[in-house]
Length: 204
Image (cartoon, rainbow, N blue to C red):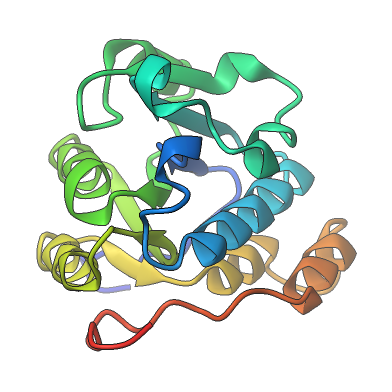
């Protein structure tokens, strides 16, 4: 490995999942929201099977609603959900959870909106020394142009662009992993049309 360079190889003992503001009020306004929800819930299931921590934020839920039920219903411990008014997920309560597991320096990031809360979370994590993996089939905005620019901006700052399936299989590592059957089954599930690549904001 080249000295001082990170290749972004995800490892189950150093990773965690951040689910940013996938809330009911946004269901009808976010481009490709079915894909965002589907990919995010698939990752939640995978991370649970791999026994990797999951942290969820809700932006002002009194007005914007709680996390969509497709994801919230999968969380046996609702203590992993944190309310916020700051755009970034890096609030004091959530950071306190990270500090309890200082070896977890790789954050897999999903959610909305890509150009606001997701980008601000990614930049703050990068500034704090975390490695950030932005799941492109699980982040979006109300406008595809904002989404495309946000992904490009995060990559310019050092984040890695990945897909949900890339993340699951990289963390699994091989067919001998105890969770491989679960991961393989999740990968084979039918899913909504995938969001366009960040370089193509002209179509959905």
